Image (cartoon, each protein chain N blue to C red):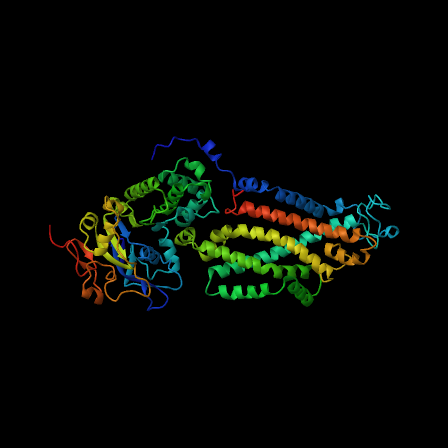
Length: 322
Length: 303
């Protein structure tokens, strides 16, 4: 059985008829897999994960046909049971390491807190384990770092501590929400390397939310491309990168600066992500899509299997066998 | 990335100063704040050891020495260092004993408004739809009334006296705590560490008091020091109006009020209590400024 199985998840803010922020998303993640979710800002990547963990607040409404994680029905899980699962088997690394740690407590205290809550470790045993975790995330001189406050650490070091906290409960699924966006380039590579080695070592499932397609190409086996709350293409990594089926995936790939070397301007996709009031009737990409036909503006395509991947498009690209 | 030279933990740990050391380093650069702190320590010392420090009993009347001027003036007597008042009580002893009362009023009114203020602020911040508007509107109404007028009204209802003075001052200074806490909470709630704590399964009370509250404390500490001084001022004002602590208790404001008939004959009975109020309020405000500079990371290293 798959570790995570989301079926037709929608998240709305406001009433039942509000424009969905996440729109009919279905996603299956196997154990030990690395899945990347890419898409521009506001495409619903983070909200999906928040919904999975039950952290969508008051005006938010979550609807789904099913949402299974490791045999638990996340939709019907009670508060108490959810607390046992989320945080232990399902952990998260955040975007900005500077705010992901509580400024009022030492690093050691914060890691030990997680250990106490989820593994029942206290006192010396917890401190010992916290030290091991810091060593595992390759923090130099971990003994003295335990008593450091977050403001005394650099960004990269804080992110390492945040990762240590996330893996403290030995999670089955680790969600990394743009873990390298706030770091500089050399540190980015180190953090990604660390995440992947931890993933292999603990046979953990990793969901990587990112803007950075280069990172995706190097790390993930499967990619989910999201646009305006919908999964527009879902496929294996080399295929999707070599021959994208969906025009949006193609546009994303074309927008990588390295692809425009020698050109006077970087390739862009004109227009903006549709907002609350200008959501198109047909395909969500139709106002921006260079290949759009008349029926693209009338009907919304479903996520169908194409030659190389699942894509939500009437006129998928790269269908002829080369 | 494994190429860092091994460092012995002993000298590494020296790199991290304790939070108190860091605070003191920032605080001690502000000379005014240190002076304020020194004066306040003197006042606290006087208050704690008043019966031993004061040369006389504060309510003992020396009938042969009414309105004696301070010792350095003509006609002054060395036993009454700062002179005596209209019924022959030693002014210095009364000022020293008055410090007890002023500090007591300041401290208890700050505590009595800080605790409910923090609770209401946390509730307003954590439940922005359920309780936020109701709590902030009530606080807005309280802020719309002049503070002294509100305090006078409360004392008028409850009757004059020490405890009622404290209650009145506490009620008057409540809104600023609620607003500060609410604003700080709303700022912190969007941070990732709060999400991380919720993710780790923190319950609501834990989230409120363990995760978020410590990060909101810096502005509250500053506000508490500053309202400590305004509590002393308000208490003095209420005492001057005859609504505060009642004579013969040696309270600075009350002393000022009962001596104002003699202002032309004996300036010291009015000036000295007034000067004491001025100096202690100034000292606390300087200290509060220093605290803000030391605790606010935005102002840190700005000088």
